[in-house]
Amino acid sequence: MRRTVWALVRASWLTATSYRLQTVMTVLTLWVTVVPVYFLATALQPTMAAAIQDEGRSYFPFMLTGVIAISLVSVCVTAVPSAVQSGIGSGFLESLLATRAPRSALVVGLGAYPIAWGVLRAVLMLAAGVALGARWHLAGIPLAAAIAVLVVVVHWAIGLVAAAMIVAWRTAGPLTTAVVVASTLLGGAYYPTQVIPSWIQRLSAIVPLQYGLRAFRQVLFGGANLADVSGDVGALLAFAVAFTAIGYGALLLSLQYARRRGSLSHF
Amino acid sequence: MDTLPMRDLLVVEGVTKSFVKRRSWSEVVRRPFHAEHVAALREVSVSVREGEFFGLLGANGAGKTTLMKVIATLMLPDAGRVSVDGADAVRDPVAVRGSVALSLASERGLYWRLNARENLRVFAVLSGVPDGEVSTRIEEALGAVGLADTGLRMVSEFSSGMVQRLLIARALLARPRVLLLDEPTRSLDPITARDFRAFLRRELTNRGCAVLLATHNADEAFDLCDRVAVLERGRVLATGRAHDLVAAIHGRRFAVETTPEGEGFLLGLVGRGLVLAVARRDLPGAPPPGGWTRVVVSVAGEDIAAAGASLVAALVGAGHAVASCAPEGTSLADLIQAVVANADAGVRT
Image (tube, rainbow over all chains, first blue to last red; front, side, top):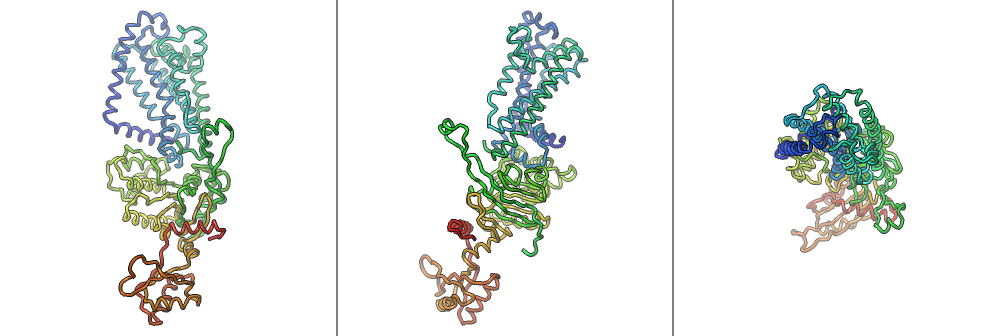
């Protein structure tokens, strides 16, 4: 399992870095993203301060984590479906499936590189935030990292469902877009969910990101400990377990369906 | 054939596979839950022994690639059974994948921005090659297909023939027990193709590997393959040595250049043991220089070399000169067409 995942990650890394200028530009783009966020957040600070008391009161780190979270959600939810879609088109998926590598290792390996790269970008953006004056509770970093891992797992698992739909029907429909849009509007990315009307707030209960973001900010910017955020972490954990089981099961079923229909390489 | 070990490594029994037919929009709206099927394989049965090369012949769409995908566990058969080295492809696909390697002619399953070695490194790991052997296997596979000196060149810079060779190297990496090759020399130049066939025969026979190859190439069908099967619209119409199939259809034939008197002598032998039929070769334009005449002679007997020797001895013994005498070749197209025509007429080849 570990060898397979590492081999796929390494190959994706070598492929990505073979586009040398693009690699450099990607890193530069991070700064271009963070600086405008800083100025906008500073301008909105007086308006937002009261609404984000539990999450550190400073709107710049709040908004920066929101931007990073949406970017990460987008990467996680599309990583495996994109790999599967292009793999079906090129016949690469068949090549992988014809090997003796375990299906679980392929599923992890196919999405691992873009997700790892997305996490690295997130860390670099957080570091850039610190350089621009964002303040963290350093003691909260391990717990915040664990929360971030759960957020990644939940959205990677939703991506498995989308990948299963692509294997079976060649389209994931609006699933990935819906997850990103719902996370953006109802996940508390740019404003806390408490400020939205109560009937919409009820909808946000089914958006996993809101639990992750709230806990992450409270730990990293508000100094909360595990007991303070146990409710949010528990909900996130439940989402992670449920979606991983559903996503992996759906993907295995869809592969079986495609083998029966003979459509693994039809695009 | 006597030297071949008798253990069947690959057994395909009564395999049937059909695909759902694509329908028009109006058809889908009128009957949304209706499905029409088109048969790709119909009760196909073949077996390949250790060290044997088995060719699949047939027109495009005959079912060759589908059969390979069923064996490689990429498709599930509707009916029938596939067994590889004792493992059932439906019940134990993981074991089958450990024994089978597939290389498809039209495949693009490579990392185009990586070099040949990096590509093979990924697939060596995926194929379960032990860490300590990965580099050795890669060099061995690249050397076998003549790509050892490609250095850091990305695969996207390779010619189509080089890509084809890399795909075959990838298939060889895991030292499979059963190798499935779809038109393996399609994009290779004639010299590389010849060397590659020699390599396949030498290496894979020694390893006891069973090779199933789909081909449109006469050299492969007649010289490389121990046996062939002719497929037509998913059905196996004939199985056997390619030369035997030709013999069954056309008889054992020799192209003979002799004198007009020699031709008359041969005509006089028809139906009297050795000679079954004599046909004047259709010669467009002027007759050959020197007064030689060319005839195609069908002979009796199982041993083609002995039959040829007897034919020449008979002519020379009767005082007729012989300029040349060689087995008459048959194109793959002629063979397939004849087998299909026989099947259409209800004659088993």
